[in-house]
Image (cartoon, rainbow, N blue to C red; front, top):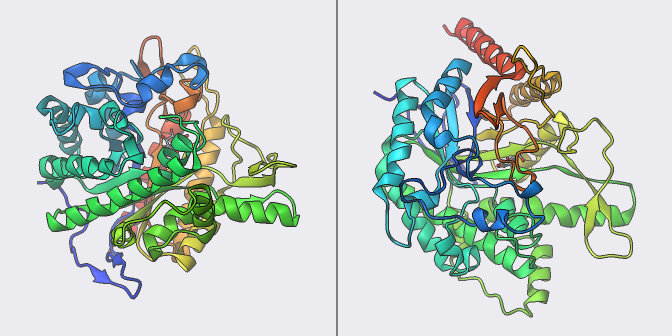
Length: 468
Ligand code: BGC
């Protein structure tokens, strides 16, 4: 029998109409990955392309034209990979499902596609690891993109059909469901900044994509409730607390706007049922007021969830562009990772406090946290990644400090299980606890893997001692 995460599935509604679960549940430690970044085998068992395949082929979009063709070959090596998760001794594994394996064509489900995930889940269950599923981690099927993708309202229905199918097939075996991973990235990076697939550069399309992504989230949550699924459901947002680069008025103003686009656009919609005024003013100006939202959309988007997922890596410094429109990033003030991201654990605390005071009291999971550093496989097959160990230690300590002051963080998923396809950076950035030798596809534990294993073991020991 699968161990259920919550013994008592009592749901209480707070004044803010949010679901709150009882607090007497053990903290979950996990690791995270996503389908396109690790699976490879893009044509296996009837899968059709996603938007990332053509995007990888556009010149200069992805580092040295890297593709997801082989990635970590997880599709073939999933059993060994689950044994690595087991070796770490963590409670849960967060992975995403490839939509185009499940629906390689519009309205046509593929039994071979779901079989892979059923096998993966069985493997996890046999080892007592809780499966936690991200429904959408950026890899829209190409057939959907050919009809406008997320800018087309119909995409909401296609997503709902896909999510419903997953609820039916694996719904009784999943502990946590994440409807979307970082709609900021799939919406704004993909449709306004052109940095992610499908690579558009339009404010209007970015906004439309975000709106439809959020709408599809709300509809999936509603469907989840109607189907009386066990397990819990929420969405994952990226948070990068933003600070003005200087004390100038201009930098303050730019920071406020950047925060509206990267955070409030999502948090206000999900928890208050509105979009930020500054964003709507811009969208209305650019569309000459022609973009009309449907009357009940915001109600659907703010459908109460069981929890909020937060991906945290760094903070951002915002600098006004001299003589230009928009803003850019200020120069780092503290040591950075290989992504050029500042290492600032306290900004996570500041953000959680803000979410608590301004938006919601529902439980929070840290659904991603980790760091890329240039790792080297030594002759003895060890990888001495002290910087990553320090990064993880400081952030894990911060999570517990946040909880000590009532933060109500229920779990921590480390990004990532192993090195993988880092989107526009290809394989040039390594986030893994396990080093992947891309020539042999072998995995090697880094020092950080030993660190995390010991850390989790020690926390569990302490918890057991505290049990009556
Ligand atoms: C994404 C991951 C990505 C990680 C590191 C997150 O925004 O969800 O897919 O690999 O950041 O950049």
